[in-house]
Amino acid sequence: MGFSTTHLIIFLVIIIVIFGTKKLRNIGSDLGGAVKGFKDGMKEGSDKAADAPAATPQQVASSATAVKETIDVEAKTKA
Image 1 (cartoon, rainbow, N blue to C red):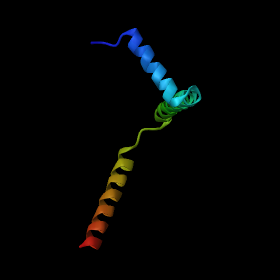
Image 2 (image 1 turned 180 degrees about the vertical axis):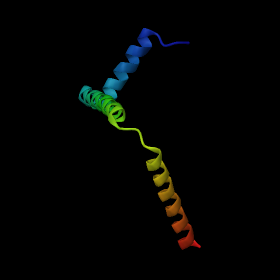
Image 3 (image 1 turned 60 degrees about the vertical axis):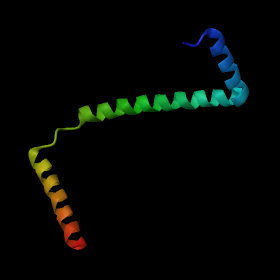
Image 4 (image 1 turned 90 degrees about the horizontal axis):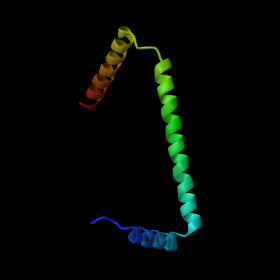
């Protein structure tokens, strides 16, 4: 129940007739640029993660306290 070669050729011809070669070329280049940008972003993200120092327990505790205080203030203003 797979596609034969003739089915694929007919499918490609229909797609080319509907969209045209110029639009398909633009879509291909846009997709390629997006994939390249994604790969570059992933490389930069992993480089930044490796360079960033690990958070100290004091920093984690102070940020957790700040979040808790923010939630308490919101609860008091809503009530």
